[in-house]
Amino acid sequence: MKLPYSQNVSAKEAPGIRSPIILASQSPQRKILLEQVGFFVSCFPVDIDETPLCDELPGDLVVRLALTKVKRCAADLQKTANVGERIPARVIIGADTTIDLDNTSLGKPLGESDAMGMLNRLAEREHLVHTGICALNRTTEKSETLLVTTIVRFGCISTEQAKRYWDSGEPMGKAGAYGIQGLGAQFVAHLSGSYSNVVGLPLYETLQLVEEVS
Image 1: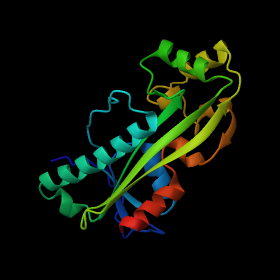
Image 2 (image 1 turned 90 degrees about the horizontal axis):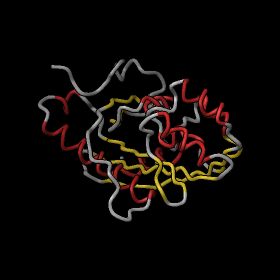
Image 3 (image 1 turned 90 degrees about the vertical axis):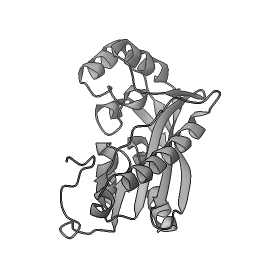
């Protein structure tokens, strides 16, 4: 049986390890960020409905989705025979990120025209990057949630620049049609707040949550 999570090295082999944790996501960026600060990460992605509720603000949306991901992950681990025992981590981390432009969430582009439209709307303007984080202790069932926001300002983006960026393949699958950790950095004129938050997971705040529930 193929397990729905990735585990490349044993915890004993991982240098500078803090503690093993479960990431309720298949995001390679979030996994890399957590490993960067010494966590041994087991990815256990979950499938949830990410449709915003009626009149739900972007910040409220990402906090709700982060909590939903963690709860679903914990429930799935309990139902999947032997998997829970094979993942020694007590803490589950869930996160969701969105781009907030004028209180409207910009999700992942559906195609080229959608991505070009998003980049055009973001050009020469400030937008907010919200990440909702949830940490849950599987043993005590204690959980904590947090919203982290970063202000990002884009410079001018020409049609040619946007088209070249789309052709690179990077915007697909990225909220707001850009990735700051890649070629999308060329559009960022100013940033105020957590850089790792824009990548997908604010590290400082996430470490605080893990400590609170551990």
